Image (tube, rainbow, N blue to C red; front, top):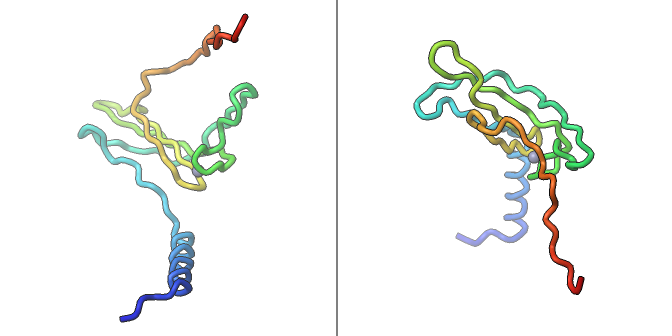
Length: 121
Ligand SMILES: [Zn+2]
């Protein structure tokens, strides 16, 4: 058996990359968390965040897709299920993050700025 040539390997890689690109892929949302089943609502476009001071918060940091990202809510809980999970997914690279009920519901930026001491002053 002869070793494949570099050209043959490159052709094989190109073929596999094309097959991968042609395969629709979407990460699977978790069906449960801590034994609690989750019912997911369909993916929807996340609201576009407009904040000139924070930079572009809508772009994907992993692949630089301009966004908006996709958002899905997961319902769970005893009795009447309520939104307890949310998932964010990039429509391009499909990076996905799932959050359980966020403890932090608001954020206010610091009012003071930490300054590094300037030399000689
Ligand atoms: Zn991405």
